Image 1 (cartoon, one colour):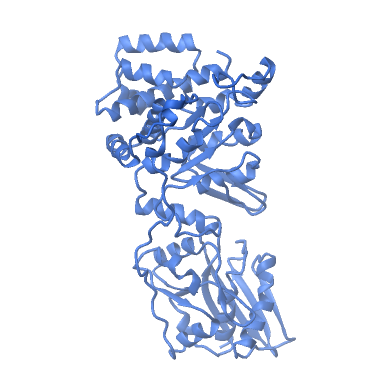
Image 2 (cartoon, helix red, strand yellow; image 1 turned 30 degrees about the vertical axis):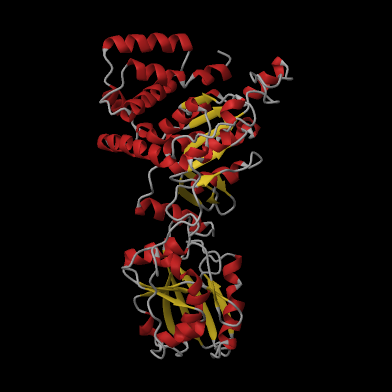
Length: 503
């Protein structure tokens, strides 16, 4: 047999399209030609595969002309994931393993020069696609747990070396299917809201944000607990469903990050204010996920918000509305999920002590104006809750009483979300028509709200944000629709919006 075909998959973001490694041996000038749009790391596989085959004790057909085609030819291929299928294709084409043994199998893995298998990124999306195709998957042993997350219906065969794979295909030493010994559990502890002293308004805003999926901005002097509060949000959010946990894990898999440390937990990402736009939303010559995708189904916390470049902040506007990010390059296009809650924190001025009774502000009026102007109106409009976090008096800081625990708050949040799911979506995701129908304001309430919006000079987007927050407040109290007290509280969360706009 001089022709062999081995099934594998490419990695295009969170997608794993099928690739067939076609190997043909022919008479002629000895050599190895690799075609099918391979990038540099794939081209280098020729030398890795040659050395791995020889060092593992197999014959490399040096006297034949070898043509390797990675089909389809117009699909970009990158990384070392094609090493193992290329090696198996050469062995099958040269008659060292039977071609029919490869039927119904897919494989991936990078080869060391001694024939051992090394891990490759993006195994979970690969495994999910293989499961959907109904095939068996051969992976490096270090990737077996990740591949097994795809479900028990997928048969995962882990191997440490090329020789183990060949021995299995020859029927000499079958590889046992891999199963997770225990269900994956998170190892990282979750911070508890009970650690927060005082700050009742900020705690209330945090609960409302969790219940309705709203974006949140804390503003106040340094050391008032803004970061501490933000880090407690994942702990009061409902647990991830199995489907959402796999979606979160798939993004981490593509980035080559460990999956077991935070398995099943809501992500909490905290990029530094020096992060570029590409780091935040994703990018590069071959677009990779950014922080907003790593925060999918979780929380993106931006501390010192005005210190971020204005250009960096403005790229958040579109994913905040759509819940996904499209990255387009000349020869690549990727779509990554970005359904996250934005929580931000900022000081009121450059020195941080504007309105702080403990220390006098040293900033001039022009410095304060320039500092606050770094946040655009359209971005502020997309932040539903804007809360001042004042300095605590000493007696509250030294008090021994703990606040309400995250577990207790989470119960109320989950009850409120169940009411929202009965309507079809979280309040933060309701369309304008569905939102108006759910709020069902009477004529008196509409006239009162119109007057308030006119007086506060709030935009149409801010108007819908007020309605969404008011609806969440009603859900937390178990009421069928918001009333005027809910609207008043919701408008109260827009005070900082007016302050930063100079109102």
